[in-house]
Image 1 (cartoon, rainbow, N blue to C red):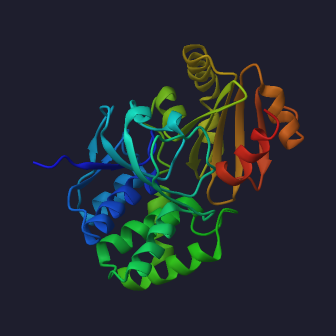
Image 2 (cartoon, helix red, strand yellow):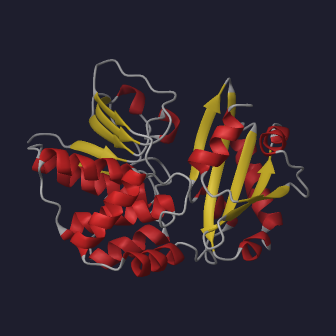
Length: 308
């Protein structure tokens, strides 16, 4: 029996990571690769679960590592420290991503699609069109959900005209009211009450490294920043434990208000001053308010990355 080619997004997967993995499997099979299989590298968050429940489909299988020589396809990430254990020795066949390219190296040539769009699924949408494949309702909803999630219903500064055009067409194909469905989906992801502090800081955390500095930028979405800040003391304990366990230089935890498009950040670590310089702010009680900042990819990471 032919071994499956595994398709997956990053650790601590978000909606784009999960939905794009499923869509990439569908697309790969339409292209004749019938031995592809979407999998995941972490737990499903509530926003993504809303999508899966809406479609009445199961989450991809959870994997923790891959063996040497395993054939894989990466979506929504490329950095090895955000990928599965063993990725350095896997055979990467292709990458479809919308993030920066860093800490990435392969022994063999591969197909690599990287576009500075708001969402990986926008790239997959274009691939469907280029290949002449019909987009059915299931994959239309999956791709629309990804775009809604990553662009905060097209309000994020990461949004491009390609995301807007794709979402408009996917809304027509899916037959759903994008605004109504999108708000319900986003709000489903803001229910944070039953998460522990450790779970909160890991829900959507990206591990990053530059110039020997190890840092994490984590993010949660909410409709009430103050409700999350009530837990600041315990959140700081969890963050400090993570810093100690992983020898981190910096941990930034962004609490993003999806309705008003602002964020409050909690910043800890020996390189906290970098964040102050990056945003021309002064941290008070290890935190600061960032007006108009909602995107890790376009706003948080670039400002921090150029100084670290």
